Image 1: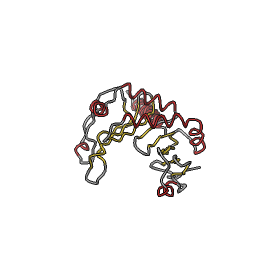
Image 2: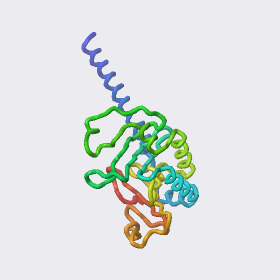
Image 3: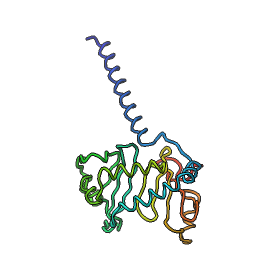
Image 4: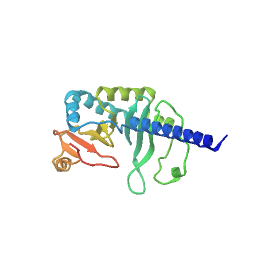
Length: 224
């Protein structure tokens, strides 16, 4: 093979590899919602039309999270979720709830564990990588995940976090995310000023706060 042909094939391999690399990251960004867009107006309109379903989602999710746990789940597809589980009655060195489990982009219907890394031995690392163990502790099954997804779809939302107040994620927008913070009863007067700053949170009514959280780059305030 001549030098010219060697260079040609090297370029072909380089370009092909670059294309695969770009396609891979394009798919990753699409699945993460990087190219998604939304707005404060859409956030408000969704609550107006889906209030009943959003409140049902809040009530249902809190009912399936046992005492002593705090759970956040976000669906980016029917078989792809971010799942964070905290043990609220246990504290780390900084006095925060112990992280039991924390994974991104996982399949909730597979019990395959991620490989252990050096970081898993640190004090702040999640205590387990076993989804099977998490399901056991929460008393969840595959049916539970399917029901959560169904209720999120009914509410036209993507995520939910347990607690009082609860946080319901409406939509990703670039690196940011629009969501609702929802109380069971009227928001205490002592908290209203904190929630009505107009930057990352806006008081919508006496029980609901509109939220926007920016990503690693860009504005951290409501962009609109």
